[in-house]
Length: 331
Image (cartoon, rainbow, N blue to C red):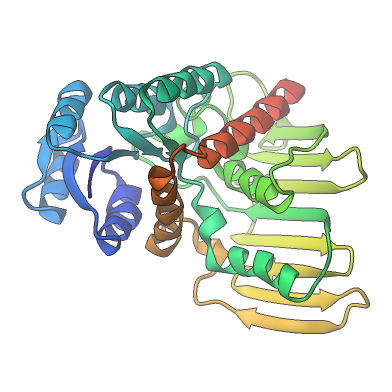
């Protein structure tokens, strides 16, 4: 199987390329406007066809019998890249957030259906071994239905990018909620079996001050509730004094706590049922070939299904809808 890469930044080089290689997928085409990054792509994948222009690259990808396109550009370029790939009759796996606006998501979903193509989003935190273990252990220890999920993402600053687009709401689409919160809300949806919360309450700020339209929030506190009494919360900040990720799953008959690399399973009485320490800590972020490979396997399963389930596309649409609701409430 062959694929094309649109964008060849750090995540493409350090996470996507190794995962593709491990899966036996050949990178045949790279589209990257930056000449220096095209040279890096050539060094990493000798013989790859290199293009600065998106349309030319998609034409070459179709001619080279590429199966899918992996979009690794900054968020504001996702929509046009996904659209170009679909118009070339290619499947698409896109970095998060797959688009910035619900209208764009609906347009691309219609286009994918018309061409019988699959769209997937790189929700790779759902493939983190520790998070998957948490879901599995809830079944193993018969903890019962989920009642509450609490997640926290602490960072001392935004991840560095060329052009500092992460803190520009026009190019990033938002701040920390759209960046790190995308992963948290995807985890929430999987934990609650695909059901979105019925009610949201949100507080956003920049440097401790209320958010304005021209700013990207650096801190968010999101409370979510279901009509059946279940609930969830998410707190994230780029202004923390430490890097840390925690997830606390509260079930009817016990709980699971993830703090970095350490996982604890407790019974309803608080007794320790199991403890594990993973090789990879969540604090190090999502640039992990292992996580990408897990998500890639999900995408490839969807490519094999006929008719297609489009589960990854629906999940991403739900995530975007939740984030859009939160921003509308905060404005």
